[in-house]
Length: 401
Image 1 (tube, rainbow, N blue to C red):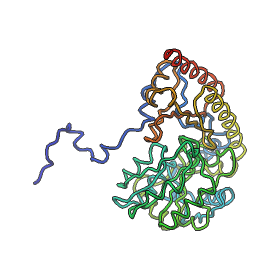
Image 2: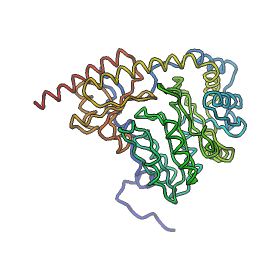
Image 3: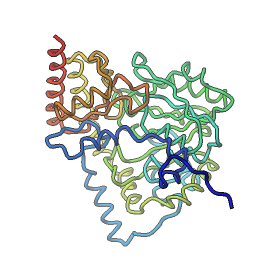
Image 4: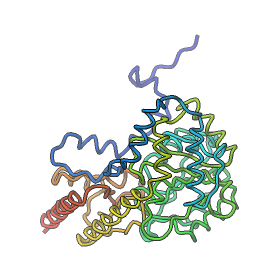
């Protein structure tokens, strides 16, 4: 009987798969474990609405429990929810999906991303994604045994993605392009004209698009255009969405994926052996949100827009270059003028002023020189946070005199 060769690792570590051992920890989580337990701290770090889920949505959850809805659902999710999603997307995104076989309910958009990647990637396939980006994209591609290929976005282009930056990176191994607009962490959007160019590029090179549009409803200036709605793209796109951000339902963990029937079937095969189905109570709540939640969603969006205007104005007043985000609830100011790295800035700020922000390099090397601040927190706390950040920036100026 053959034995595993000895290694320099501890006994427990030696059992861990190499590709898992090499996956980096989330830069967001690492940083926030550091600030856990601090008193009087103001966090601009977590990407979570500060609103409680609207009452009528919570009430729908309670009613579902009262009716004894505590069972598993179909692997694809409740048909009633899939019908609500189909109607919602046709009305708001101009895309029509068949509820019977082109929609799958997932445990948050995070699971939807994982299912999409695992369903399409053969080992060694290359997946393009834009950077800076949400922390899970590159690790998720690696976990599916793919090769992540970053496409850098630039502040001078408002962090939007350009077809001309994608084209040189396409090879015979390119399988898909992973998009996220509006983007976490920059708040950038994808204008329709650029989406059309990217769609044409993907069609010409037979590339699938995976489009994470979880912040779509939080688009402040102009109209959100899904790349899946463009001519010829519906069959070439896996559309991902969820209710966490726009409806303040992070704890419900409810997302969904839409695509042609063969792709949804492939994702369902992964889903049924891992998650089985999303919680039935969350699915009932999602129906209520999609069918009756627009007024509350618009109220929260209006509040985020007010806070965005405030925080962008104050970063600019401090002399920090700050792109005005067009969507989501993050700002991504440059701190390059301070002479500090993203990591140094975030650590010194939290140590001196008890304000937590996320170092930009947590979102890939393209984020170095920036910090991410979430303005999904109360205006009172935002005002105090900006007061402290101003004091921190002035202390650096004074110490350099």
